[in-house]
Image (cartoon, rainbow, N blue to C red; front, side):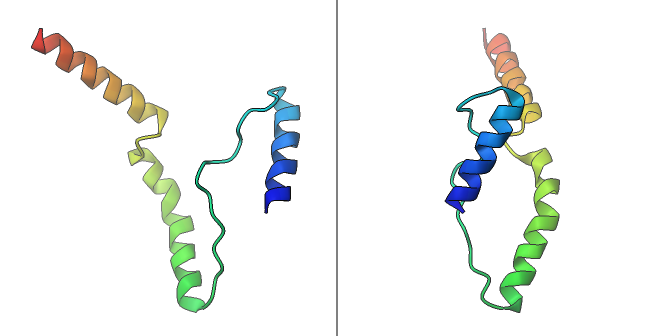
Length: 78
């Protein structure tokens, strides 16, 4: 996995002309699928994860909304 991530990061950064830029999400870990139940849980995660992006605090849209809310709170509190 490390070799794949290193190689793909290098290729992506070369195409983007962005040397040494992080491509992979932090805190990624591999998981061994041991049975059908685990496989089905992972399938559900893969299906539902993109839907959760709208609510994710790392989503740039939500960051802008939070910043605007903080500015509004600061303004009203003054």
